[in-house]
Length: 222
Image (tube, rainbow, N blue to C red):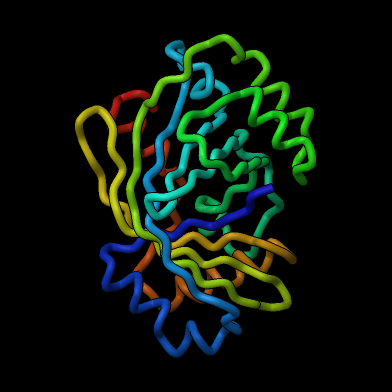
């Protein structure tokens, strides 16, 4: 299950300044920091079966080397948080990831590789099996640099991702400049709690729309 909060920043300087500010560093205990370069392709059938169901299939090329194939379901309901404004940027959904050297998505391979995943296999199978035999085509792309800060906050482990790059679709593009706070272990209240601290001290707003949804808007397919 992926639970995360997205915050939109006006520019890269403001985004990175927030992550380096004393009020941010004093609030948590940093465990590690890493930087990756991602190139993502989003797939769907020609009939847009995935778009209509809220499902995402993504092929992520990491640092120009191996690939991560991902399937995400539509968002599930979340309990109310302390800041109703933050809830617009907070999502939770089932997610399956397979690391591979394969550049193309294979439904049978993905299902076989995901049987021991944490999220329910039955949900994944119900999503993918009806697509077998159908062509999956690339709808849109994103390319961005991600700086990942893994940290402890209020007893939870969080990944704080700083993303800068662009979404591409329909021959057009939109900038990416955002922070994602993802819950790795612990309580979802830690995600919203850190979000409240960041919103109180930095120039940012909750971001309710995913990167794929922004690509679809560029294509007039949202």
